[in-house]
Length: 147
Image (cartoon, rainbow, N blue to C red; front, side):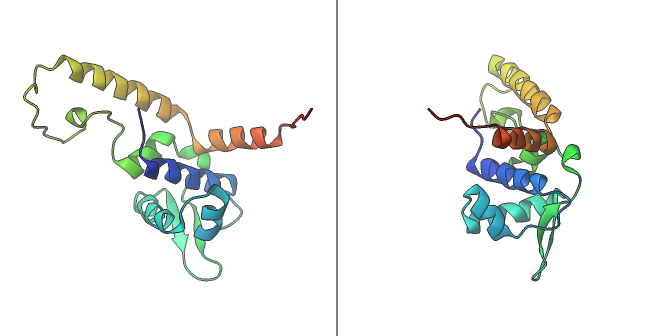
C-alpha cells in the first residue's frame, strides 16, 4: 500500500532522532538537511509528532527536537498512526468512519481489506525505530568495494 509523503518524511525525521538519541536535541534544520526534507513541511510534521507524544521540542539556541521515549519503545505502527491516523488501505474499514458505500454490510472486499490492514499492523508493530537505526548504521558501516 502506498503511504503518504508525510509518513515518509516523518519516519525519516524519527529515524534521524533515533540515531542521535541520548545526545541532546536536534534542530529541525539539521534534520531537514541530513534527510533532504523540505524545512517548512518538516515543521508541520514535527508538530504532529509532538502532539502524538513521540517527540519533545524545546526553543532557543539549545533547543530542538528529540524522541520522547527510547527508540526501542516506538514502533512504526505508532509513528504511522500519528502521521496518517490509520493504516487502513480503504476508507470503508477505518475505525469510526461511516462510508457512503452502497455495498456496506455485504461487501466481500471489506474482509480482504481488513486482513490486509491486520497484516500491515502486525508487521509495523514488530519494527521499532531502534531496529531501523541499527540497520541503517550497519549499512553505512559496510565497506564499499570499487572496481
